[in-house]
Image 1 (tube, helix red, strand yellow):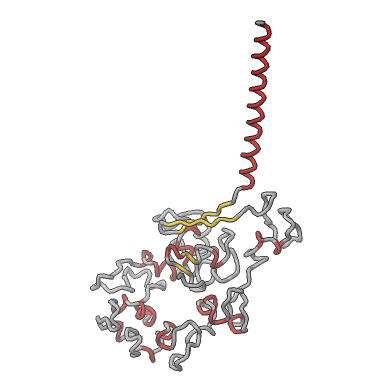
Image 2 (cartoon, rainbow, N blue to C red):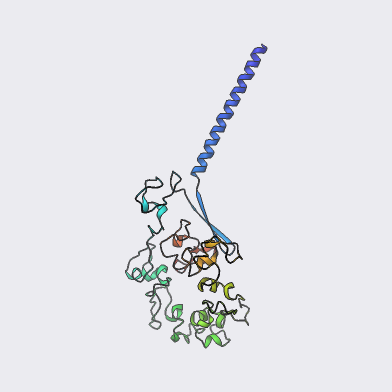
Length: 323
């Protein structure tokens, strides 16, 4: 009887060990499967203290990506080759369709397939290289560039002297922008008014001279809205002048926080994203309309948070405004 009890206890122990081993093996496989099938997350920090993330599913069952987009081979073994593979969209070999030149913005076609054609497309009327979509006829009562602003109501016309005494823009031109009066009644006067900044060069904080003169050129010291940002501390200098830290291709791709103030490096920094002189990051009017994934986050042009970030109230001039 004692022998039978011992044998029974041994058998139960073997069964328990076998069940535990089987359970461990099953759990291991489940964990492995979950890991391999999970999504890949690309996080793009938004300079100035914010952040955003874009999420994309794994590109192929092999876990690989199509890294060579012009070799005629299926590198990631997902049955899609080169430009037929989503991995290649936005690369120099497979750029997305664009609408960003005078020719493309005057052919009557929706080249980038966003539902807007020629000058009605922000990619055209917001692009600095597209001159045919500017409001150059400032007295014909027509919306020449199809941006819903006519003649002197369009900021394209503010540098035109014919608009300096216009009742719709009576804070424009040297006289109105230097008289210490709020001529248009918007609460801002002289160089603190956007109309003056758009019409009078001396009210800008954009070029190498204005961004090194130790003056706050685009404000007015007697107003509460005096912004108190001088030279490279002013966004206008950071985004336009090209002489401030973290505003050129070299410093926006060196993995260093060159401005040493915000803990955001390279394309995660607003200065790199929005500087007009930077080509290696998404964010400005040109890099958000070139059909390329400039910063390598797998999101092209206006699909990237750097180009259109409505949570932070920003959109590049070549992307649709936020609602």
